[in-house]
Amino acid sequence: MKNTKKVSNNTKWLIILAVVVAILALATFSIWRVRYAPTGQRMSIKEYYGISGDGAALFVNGKQIKKDGKAAAKVSDGHFYIELSSLKSSIDDGYVYDSTEQILRYTTDKEVISVNKGDTYYTSGRTKSDLKEKIIITGTSDKPYVAVDFVKKFTDIKIKTAKDPERIVVEKAGYKKKVTTLKNNTQARRFGGPKSKILADVKRGTEATVIESYGKWVKILTADGIEGCVMSSTIDVAKPATVANSLPERSFKHIKMDGKVNILWHQVTNRTANTSVNHVLSNAKGVNVISPTWFRVSDNKGSISDIASLDYVKAAHDKGVQVWGLVSNFENKGIDSTLLLNKTSSRDNLINNLIGKAISYDLDGINVDFEQIQTDAKDGYSEFIKELSLKCKKNDIVLSVDNYPPTNSSAHYNRKVQAQYADYCIVMAYDEHYQTNGPGSNSSLDFVKKAVKNTLKEVPKSRLILALPFYAKVWTTKNDAMTVKSIAMKNISSYLKENNVQETWDDSTGQNYAEFSKGGAKIQLWSEDEKSLSLKLQVMKSNDLAGVAFWKEGFEDSSIWNVIGNYTK
Image (cartoon, helix red, strand yellow):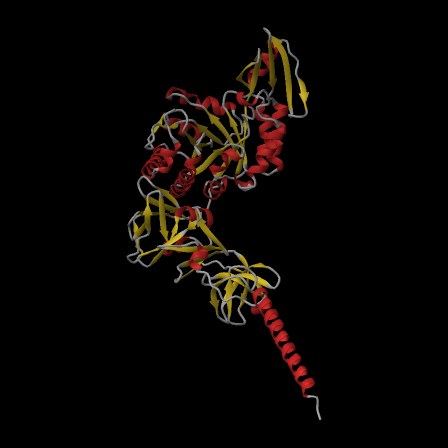
C-alpha cells in the first residue's frame, strides 16, 4: 500500500515550487520589460519641433533652424514662408529688406529683383513677374517672412514641404550628405534607445539623410522632414551624395585694365585746383589712372556735391590716363551711413546720381571711398556695391572700392561680395597707428604683408590693388600727452636736417627710424622713403597683385616714380 501522505507532501512542494518559479519568471519578465522592452509611449512631433499655431519647422542641410527658440518658418493662406533673418543667416545672405519702405531687394549677377511688401509680383527693371496670387512678403516690418516659392527662384536650393506637422526641408547646392533607405517599417524616436518616446512611424522604402550615428542607433532626417532616431539595423548602408545645382551658375563679369594698375589719388578741394592736372601728370611718370576727390555725399537722401571738370578728364585722356572719380561719405559729419544705405530710395538716388555724374563727365571709373560705416549698414552697403556695379557694367564704367586692412571691426564691409561685383578692390595699407593705440609706424612692412595676405582670403589677386602712403607720421610725447601729425614724404629729409637728426634702419618695420628730444618732448618718426616703399612694392609684385595706388599726389618725392616704374611695368 502506497504512502498517500508522502505523495501528498510531494505534490504540495511541487505546486509551491511551480508558483515560486512562476513568480520569479514574472518578476524577471517585468524587470526585462521595464529595462529593455521598447516603449510604446509617444511624444507630439510638433512639441519636439517646438512649433505651434501657424509655425512650421525649418530644416537646412539636415539641421533644424529656430529663431529665438521658436519656429523659423510659418504657413499663411496655405503657403510656406521663411523668417527673413533665418533665411539670411542659414540659406542666403543676399536678401536685403528695407523695413522703412518695406521693400525687399535681391541682386543676381545680372539683375536687381525688387518686391514691395504685400505684393504678389516682383520686378526686374521694367519687367514684372507674378507669383500666382501668392503674397511674397508677409509678417511685420520688424519680422518679415519671405515666400518659399520666391526664394527658390533665385537661391540655388532644393526644397521640399510637408504638412501635419508643417515643415520645410532645404538643401543648398553643394551640400554633402549621407543618404540611406529604411529597410523595415519602424518608429523614429526622440533619442537613441528603446525607451525613448516615439515621434513618428516611418515606412519601409523611406529615403533619409543620416545626421549622426550612435552605434546601434542613428539619427535620421527623412526627405520630407521627419527627424528622429532609428536602429542601425533598420536602414541600408549610407552612401555619400552631393546636392546638385538646380539654377545656372552665376557669372560675374569684370572690366580689367591691361597690365598693372597704377593709381594716383589727387586730392582736389575746389574747381580751380582742377587746372593742375597737366602738371600733376607730367610729374607722375607711369601713372595710368588718376582718381580726383570730386564727389561727396551731401545728405542722407543720396544727393551728391561735385567739383568735377570735363577739361580735366580731357587732359588726362589726351595723356592716355583714365579718370576714376572718387566719391566719399565722410566730409559731411551729418551723413548717417545706415540712413543713407539701408533706405531703398536713398540708395537708388545715390547710385543714379553717381552714374549720372560719371556719364556727364565722361569718367572711366568710379572709386568708392566710404569709411566708418556702421555695422547696422552692412546689408545696405553690400547692396549698394551690387546695384552700383550692375549699372557701371551697363555703362562701361570701372568700379573700384577702397577698404581697410581686414579686422573683425571691418568684417561688415563684406569684401567677398565686393570681390564678386566690383572690378577692383583696394586695400589701404596705412594708418597702422592712431593716437588711440600709441606711437608707431604708419605703414610697417609686416602690416602691409598681413593686409595683403588677409585680403587675398576673400579677393582674387587679379583684382586686388595695394594702396601705399606718400606720407609718414610724427609723434610727439610730453608729460604723458601725445600728439601726432602727418608729414609728406618729400619733406622728411629737410625735417630731419632742421632738427639735426640721423635716422637708423629698423628691420622690424622695414623703415628708417628717428628719435630725438625737443622742448622737453620726445619726438618719433618712422620714415617713408625709396627703400621702405621698394619693400612694400615687392609685396605687390611677389603676390602678383593687380597693381598699386598712392595717397596722395603732391606728398611724394619726385624720385620715387622711377622706383614705382620698376614694379609696375
